[in-house]
Length: 130
Image (cartoon, rainbow, N blue to C red):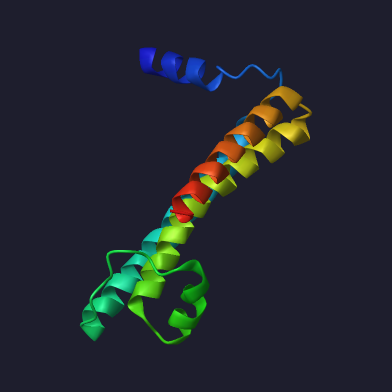
């Protein structure tokens, strides 16, 4: 019973005055499908690399080379696509949260979500520009 009380208090820690359950459900779906897509792509890429006896590089394929390498059937491009899906999943999740709070009319949490999104995009951009 104490576990349920703890779970309920955690769920109510964001006091918007409105029910945020739809936002949490949408984000759960985004995260679940992001994981499924990433894991599937990674599995396909690793299986293809094993079947082709192709070595996987130490670095991901450059963003601009992913599509041509995919068309060539290179396993490293599929693994790189899986990595991109892993990176995109939290970005889409934060966008979903921001959209949900905006739809509820809660500007404070929508703005906070957009700030988190900017931090994520800045971190991703800095890692890609290395």
